[in-house]
Image (cartoon, rainbow, N blue to C red; front, side, top):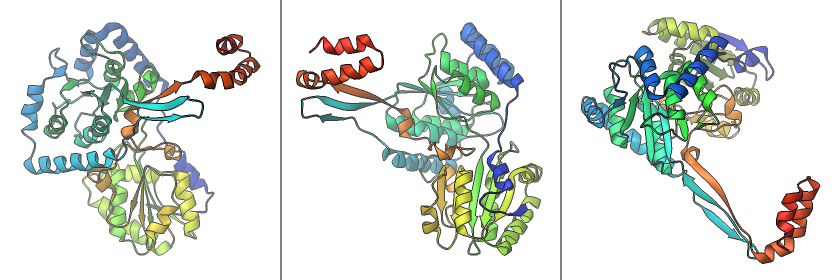
Length: 423
């Protein structure tokens, strides 16, 4: 990894902050074409795309509950146990995010409040292909279920067929509406619906570039979770940190595969930087993913050396990483000053994969600096808030003229009349 001495304002920091994947106009055009065709052509068009791009055999898009149960039974018993515990942990964490409706009464008899209701139907995109993502199902579906969402529909390319681990999680969570389709065509199906398939209120879950752009295109017709960028990790490490552990954690994100992942370490001394770099080199040389790691680290693998932790914290907050680990002597104190991060992992035992798979907090996190204004996926993302206004005659008589005056000032004559007629 390249070691760079930096200050708060540094060209290298700015370069790391500006990384990202810019889809071509050709990809945008193709996505729009697919979405348009799905909207017009309905289910037959979705099936045609699934056959062409997703390995669908025949014309049956839905994976039956019986098929899910049969495949789930093939999951390794030890894996089943781990997945069950992960579901339990994630559910327990997210139950603390639940919100309640509330009302307040004013002194003139007016009643105001907020009604909290879950969305009715949510679509979950689960990536397929050669990869297996049971954790994606857990992290996206559990908060929706805790929120009270009644219907969760899953789409997945599953080119090699539905994987046992994914099927097992679907079965454990009671999700039975699953369709063999991916890419922009899956997003179109979820957003527009088709014969026998109702459209959803919201689409969540990661996907390839076609699925990501399609989510962006249908936003407004349905809600979406976020447009996720390449994964990233930033580790704050001083001489007390085990350099081999730091290296392992950096590579845990570098291995994702797009080549745009960021694996960044910030340290306050050059000796620690060199030790971490040596450990990274050794682990990369012995990795089955060596070529992929070397490509990613050449682009966005950096060890930044700062003069002090004041600068180190400021740079971390500027980068606003998806995953932020603190492996320093005063980790708790340092973490208090970290305000921009998707998730903060405090102490040497809090390795990023602990959060990815098992601890309980959601692993769907803001990327590409969006942690400055975005939050992890949670129960709140599946809730609707409706304002309640029940004004009394006394309150209108007291405040009507003031309301009308504001309306008239804004040029809305009939707004004012709607109130004045009640006086």
